[in-house]
Image (cartoon, rainbow, N blue to C red; front, side):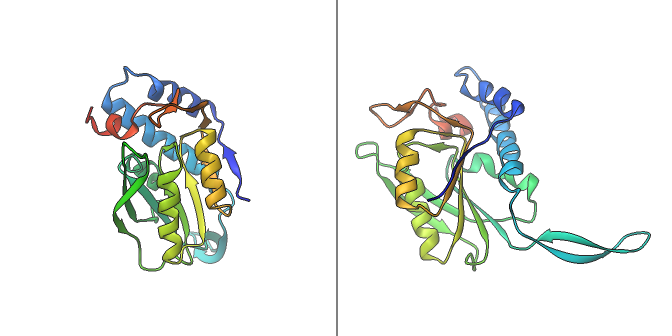
Length: 208
């Protein structure tokens, strides 16, 4: 069974207060989502494998460590885009794929409209990124698609989740670790996390 890891850090706590606030403007909301992405990434990549390489310093040769595997960031569109720059600030060599899903507001089920991944994901560490883990439907479908294309080492990276979404994702993909900042109380009757952030995509892009 995959782990559910909650990332605790004073700087993240401070930024959570900003993004939860309904009066936070779009620019500030976007900046803080990105910054949380950076801080979370530093914590969740402690166990990435490395390999030795020889490096010539200005003084002498020495052995250093570099990442042993490619890292691929796969945001679930649109809200996942809000964390990409923050993650890539920490891992500038990471490749980026995209999975486009939208939620049918009647059934709450995800509908795929776009997918583009790097050519070979079978040997990469893949970070599936979506700030919100609500019903779990979008993340399940996204990871289904990645596995169909050979992905194996997959991690879900979010900010706010709820018990319903965690349960659904864990049952559908028990080999995928889930990283979150907060586990909120529940889903409401229209599929939003309570207390949550509201519609993260709309708040990131100023569309509501």
